Figure 1 (cartoon, rainbow, N blue to C red):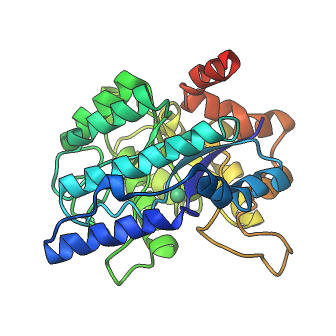
Figure 2: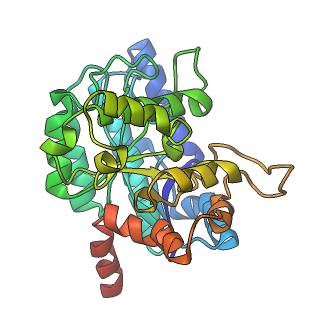
Length: 343
Ligand SMILES: [Zn+2]
């Protein structure tokens, strides 16, 4: 089985976008926001939105199941206050649940959190619990910068985040560290902001005792870890200079990287530098980087090909990257498999 651990619902039905546009406008104009009851999305619209996109690509590329979350750039935690973020997160998470109910073999849910700038992360614990316990989701996307590009939250290793980590540990779910759309004009959302946040998170984590406090906490740094594999020597040197252990000891049970790196040399480097046990297969399709690479004739985000062709990997390594590691990190996949068997 091939598990793609990073996919977003980027082909949402039009009425979801209408709802969000009206909600955003209501925030700006201080008028009444749209009601949830006004949302009209049929099962057929959901099917249509996926059949020609994610499902088609799963079939063409030979991947089996996608761990699926709301559009990351659409989380927009900086828009409105905590109540706006909660309403929007619940709408988006409920829609992911409908996708997973319609296609239980193809999609497994991961939730968006109702974070908001300056609001303690423990306020997101209730929505996490709802999604895991009631909707059968297996993880969450945790935004290290709800400001949308100004990086003014405490580092992930600060006690500010601890109550939320406690809830994750209690529920036994991992988080993908994932920012949202950028409102700082100095950064392009998917080109620089995402990768900057990934790199920032790693540096915070390796200088801290977070995993001494939470030995079972699991965090996934997406997009191949940002600058981490390429600058592994810098990070390793900084860790050692600061009296920290070797990076492979720090990350061992707690930090994982995905394969959303859109060229062969990048995947070759990732799989050479980062221990295979800490790499999860992912493509982030559809949407982060659209289109076909004119040099290869294949889509940039067809990342399975790069893993297939990475020269350092054995078949056993590939099995870990494609399936085994995801089952380890998303421990609730076990429960999901059992649920499916029961159905
Ligand atoms: Zn993403």
